[in-house]
Image 1 (cartoon, one colour):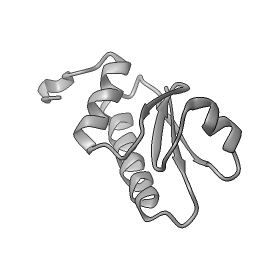
Image 2 (cartoon, one colour):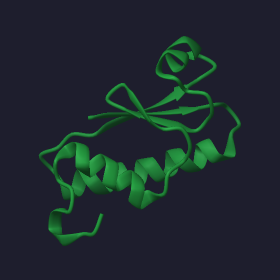
Image 3 (cartoon, one colour):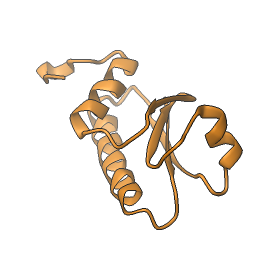
Length: 97
């Protein structure tokens, strides 16, 4: 799975989103060792055409596997739910989603 966070330089919300995403991916990698989650920060000023092609209109936005999923920063539980449902591990270990 590949998660992309679309951000702009100097955006405080974007920095916060990156930190939250990095923490969540680290947790999920530990909890689901057989699943690989890759993430990258996409600077919309450097990759404007790509961002526009996906429909990014604001930052921070998140795409999963090339599909724009969130056009604003979701809560951690909502993001976890989306990732786990795509990994096929939704509700694993008795956690509520």
